[in-house]
Image (cartoon, rainbow, N blue to C red; front, side, top):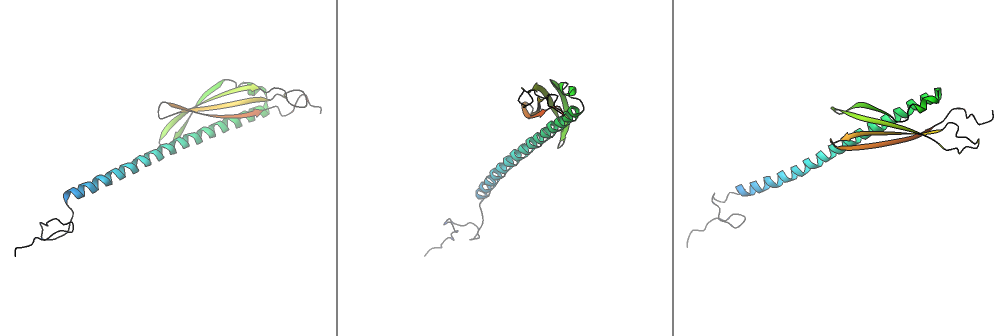
Length: 160
């Protein structure tokens, strides 16, 4: 009878006397699979960060529009003529988002509200629209619009 060769667990002849282990190709295939999995995770993390930055910019735009609306309401409570000064007004406000500065362009338009009150007049009511735009990823302009109605505190048409 002749000598028998030791077989590995896969049925192949073992060159190291039966000691189990992985071949170089098996290790390389495992590393490629691991690298592809990590690359997929990295793409997901980058998408989440990008979405988070966009949400932060939108939150700042909402805050800016609310601040502009409150400032207008303060002016309107003092003098209704100040509301007309907001028509076609455009200004740029810069805020810091994470580690970069973002410029927000605020455009406001004032439109008279048609008479709908029981006193027969519009009581100096105006629809004011604030549109805040900013650049996202360099080329994409993103808008946010806030509308509010401002009117005189005392309706000149009502009986006192």
